[in-house]
Length: 398
Image (cartoon, rainbow, N blue to C red):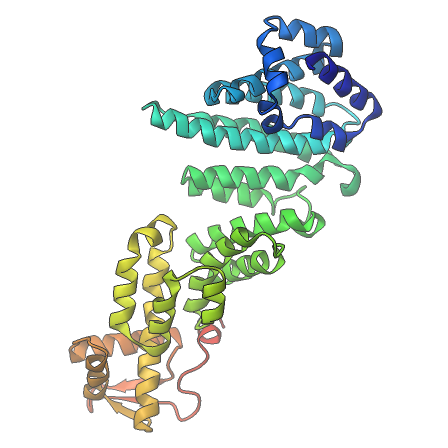
């Protein structure tokens, strides 16, 4: 089978059949092929055989690829990663040549498998108590891969730049894994630099993945407008059959929209199995600060792990605003005493003194979430006669 594989590869190379060639290099499929694995175990001179059948350049790539498959079949993850890393290195030498745009399908497959194997190798290194290096090492090779696409200045639809966004998404995924936000920002900036194609030029599937990652990065950077735009795009345009991917986009989109005063329906939360947000959103909508705090405390470990804890703390201002608006609605007057707001806080189970109430109200007015002023002399909040509680997202982002 190894000899047959070599001949098939060279036949497809000569025919410049990129999609079929990529299909031949499925590492996960070959690792599960018992007949192929048994044959590879009996061939100690695999490299020589491959080069004799396929020539030096492709023979070396095939040798590393098949060796990686063999290691993977034995669950020798670090060795499988190492040999695949070498396969990608050798392949990039071929890909950087002239008239090799047709190799893009294989280029994209090898890069994806590089990331997946690096993630597995990183976990193995951590379990063994070693210093994990696989992900960091893969970044350097993927940078080289990205450079090889951007050097092609031909028309986009005929150039290697078609593969550039997929490499950036792999780099972003890896740097998220490493929690290296500085590198995340660097790789994101590449997509707005000179020579990088418009994101709209790429296939929709690649746009969805990239904008999901860019949205998450914008969220961490407190750029909530961009975060909402990108995460909403990812949720809307991700195919319906990929439920888990849509759920991930929604998981990060809901807190951003909550800050804007936009609340998900119970149906949506149930459909995508997001019970974490039921009480949080209900409490914010009702101004129930005690329930809000309890809900945040209950899920604080998950929120911290996902980088959402600080955003959820910021969303508390929405609950303050809504409690104030409810008090105004009940009293039906534009002048509300500080002591009356204290009663409202007490009603939801929160004891708070007059100074704290004034600080909260002053913050709401400063943010544009409440129109009015505080009369310290009379200990009252005087609300605007027109639209005293503007729509939150317009107030925050106008």
